[in-house]
Length: 110
Image (tube, rainbow, N blue to C red; front, side, top):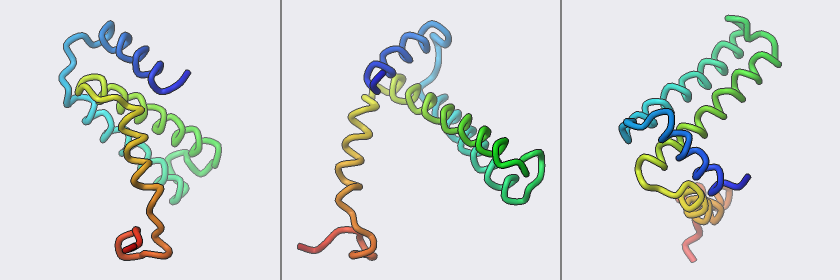
């Protein structure tokens, strides 16, 4: 499944399950899941809360990444954005940057 197909499928799921969702709600979900990802890193680094095991920490990170992606699709769907276009536009800018050669701006002057 490509990104566009995923977004269309997700939009149908979202409409079925959360027909009255507000466009900002997905942003709150993204923030929450980024917090869970941060939690996995912090607790894993400190080897506490059951995350001393590398597999447990990796599973928690993977779950958070998947949830972040789904919330990003929700955000795009409720705000009229095409996920693939957003990613490709950003990547076309980011991939031109070379922070090692141009540590101030990432781009060459010429």
